[in-house]
Image (cartoon, rainbow, N blue to C red):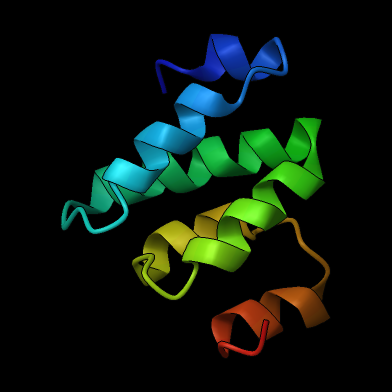
Length: 85
């Protein structure tokens, strides 16, 4: 959540670096926070988030992924959840 200021400035590097480090974190609240920050990246530049997701979504905990793709169109959400991207 500390990277929200940078996201608002269209600077996503730190957010994505932190998300990469926390991909395998077991804490539910961390997973939710990272997913939320990825969704905030999407609000500014969807292409950046999708590039990150396409590389990492199979490694992400389901909670993190669900938060990150919450606003995607239903067909795209289902494709991510079913591993078809």
